[in-house]
Length: 194
Image 1 (cartoon, rainbow, N blue to C red):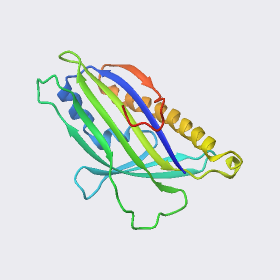
Image 2: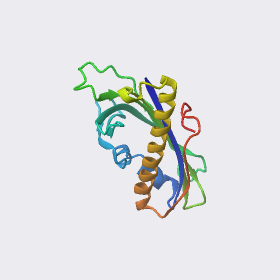
Image 3: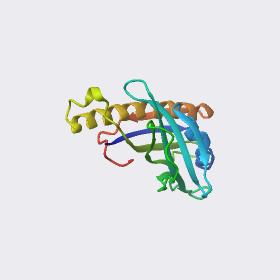
Image 4: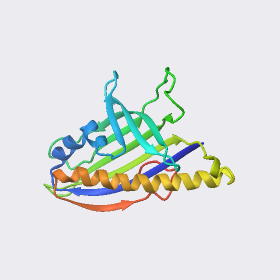
């Protein structure tokens, strides 16, 4: 079964947009702020990265999640009031080697950071992330219909992602004066990042 989790948030950073854009473009640093991240590795392909995460299943067993993501962006020129966008787009790969164990999965991840100037020295950043991972239903939960288990798993994943995203924003903002404007769980777990 595939389980989808989403989260969204917004933060206001005390920094000019080119400065904030440059900071947020450091892919390895930004993703590394996620407490579940065990590594961000550049691949042989330009701007394509491998993300390695470790989480625990409902029984506390560690699960290793692997994502391949391309970072693409559009940066408004200096002095422009246009928005800048940094996107993380799922990169399709064929994993030719066997996965090392039954607790390692290849997932899909998409996200975006939308930067908007708010005055000369302040930038707002809207964050949206969506992931999809395979999920094996534990024996204990197999008594419930699959759709109920799927909805429960997606809600739990989205709540966890929202908490992790808030932690990431807090880590990012240590280099800026800031205010977290909004921290919200996406109502539609099957939706794309806003």
